Amino acid sequence: MRVEEIEEKLIYGISTRTKNSNEMDPKTAKIGAIWQKFYSTVEVNYKDGERVYGIYYNFESDANGEFDVLAGYEISNENLDKITIQKGKYLVFHKTLKETDDNARIQAVIETWGKIWKYFSNENSQYKRVYKTDFEHYKEKNEIEIYISIE
Image 1 (spheres, rainbow, N blue to C red):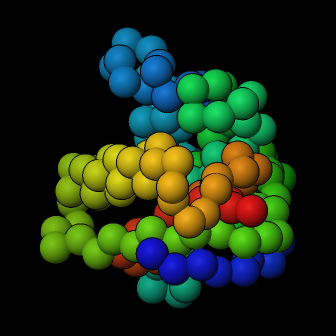
Image 2 (cartoon, one colour):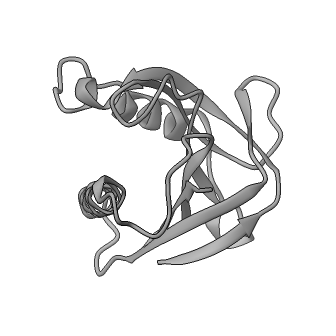
Image 3 (cartoon, rainbow, N blue to C red):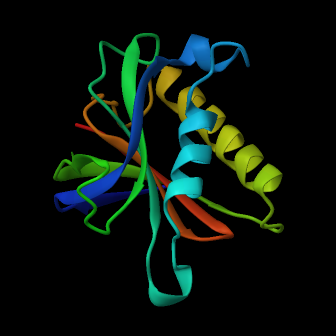
């Protein structure tokens, strides 16, 4: 983990509203569907420096409430939803994958979120989550960083 100051960044993509308890049940989960729609709508050119983001925002309360999520990238596209990653301080969780297939990537994200929830559920953790704008940054096909907004 590391702390990083982030500047405001505009991201374009496909969004939905959900909550974590819905995402635990395949019948009510929505996040996977927006990722599928995003990748079927947009071609991301990693070789030319394009990067993908999963943005979590408009939190109703905490990890138990509803929130919006957007699968997107930085390329301006007026046919897509847009959200601004807020300027501020973030705690960054990093994960490098040994394999780059979709299942390995999904599993890595799930494991990293598990570490995040565990960290912030500890009342003695050094940093406190503020539920403003959190995001996953897919830097390469085998490298993921998850940024959590903190005080």
